[in-house]
Length: 209
Image (cartoon, rainbow, N blue to C red; front, side, top):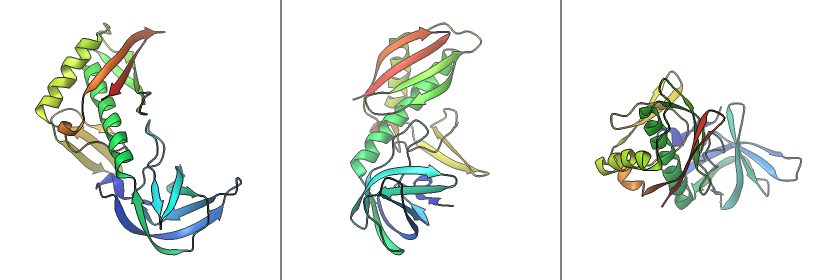
């Protein structure tokens, strides 16, 4: 099982042991580390990018309990330097955090988030109605989110029986394996670009500026 360092810290440079290197069907190589800084694609968030011993990591995916790093060439087993692209990590963290805030806001309006897509340029959260289910406007979402941003709420992380919980200030905790800003002063402006209802669901599209 790969230890996921990004669960509990935000370092972007470190060292790890290559424990396995195997050739993929497409001719590239799958590198498994004992521990990793790289967030894999999943949970509505794209994968981190970066380098292992200076070689570009082209994909990061989860296979069973392991994180697999896809590179263009093989690497020898042993200890190596690893580095993620800090600018890409920050971008993904901002978009993922914005998605959480939209989820919180939707719940305030009687909707329950069931699906999230935090990809830059494609952000959207899908809700199903709760007890009330009246459709809120984009301005209603933005008012709540801007208020939380102004409070500069701090991110909290807790591991509970192997499950990772993330929350901001006194807002509810979400089970989440993704990356987020350390406090909402680092989020940037969130723009609600579209709110629509389709087949009983509410779909909120957003951008982070």
